[in-house]
Image (cartoon, rainbow, N blue to C red; front, side, top):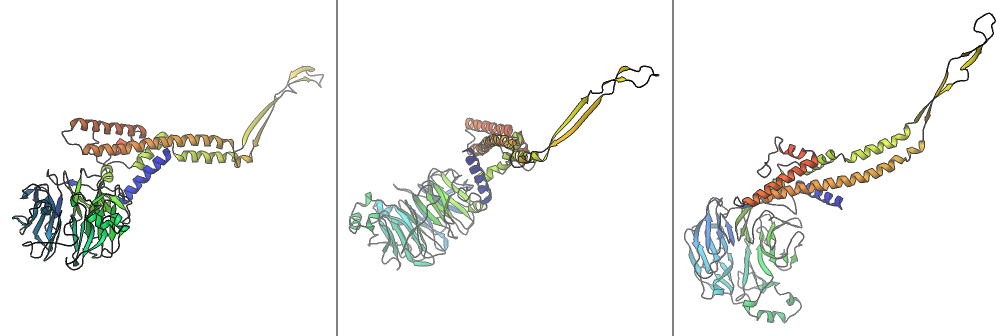
Length: 531
């Protein structure tokens, strides 16, 4: 079990380092709202860098320096003050439209002056929920039907077809085919191929309609105030006039033939299929707001982009031509650069670990310090295999005492004849060499090595498991520490102590290697690791 944990951790680190976290990539989100909350809509000027408009629950605000400073340019009066949508006139960013809960507003001078060009007595008709601005025609969706103006908002007519009294959720069209208009309402997705003269339903909102011919009449006759739909938002690709994308609470659908047929986009990687907003980039990449965060669809899979986004609720998204993604949230406006995610250089994990030694280096240091390297067992096995080539050496020595004592005789003239004398010692010695060639195949030392190998593997797995947990726990605490405000002193002190504790634990397992690498030139330390 522990082997699997360590293997998964190592594989995860390798994948993050190689591909920048394809399915777990983090963007570096910046809060540029400067305290302006309840942001529901965002509009980025494509021609003027740093010019951004946002719609809140009661006003339209503008910045000309990328969010450094904001100023109110429109205050909404009335009971329902929410700004639901902001949009430029096609080809002219001087003309801005604001669809609000109290009518439709327009400005011809980049928000300096505003005029309300649509207002109704009914609160349902007065609440503008969708907008499509063409060169000569404006389509306005409300909670009580669709309105059309063919004279730039001076006069309006209400659509009398199936979409006439329906709650309009979204409107869109392709710049390459302005005669084809698409809208989403509680009854389904409708398409007009003749500039709004007639409407054809191309996607059913009520799943029972597929099998029950009478369900449509029952559904449409029900009380509009009590009706709901799983459809949410419709978007089109700028470069592909035939491609339409639909966000629903059951996932994302795509049509590549102007709505004739629809396919459910695979939900692999989505934490929740409840989508509320969807936007298409110029490269045909899909970005959506789900219940669980912001996701991007690319190469047959979704990946979450909102790991570092500290937002309670995300309302909509925006894109500019410089690769920036904007998230309009209840607690502000956030900005992230998509190119940093593609390069994998500014993801949260890479960002916080760039000043740290790599996890593989820490693991190897812990193995060396504990002397549990696999090479040690391999060396033992090689030495045991060579054991049979070395002979058993035995040396023998023997003392011969047969002629130790003898009679001196053979002469009658010499003295000391016929006397018992002590002779010289006789010592015998020998050397023998012995080989057991059967040990070339197997010897008893291998059994002992196997036992020691199992014990060493268990010890090494325990060490690697502990080191891996401590390493990533330390990164997580550093992230949490940076997310705390200065006034949260008690929490900050606790987090700082925890970082020091984890650092000491890593040093204990690596013989001080971890701290030595932190203080090496070229490996800087941030505020969370300085002690």
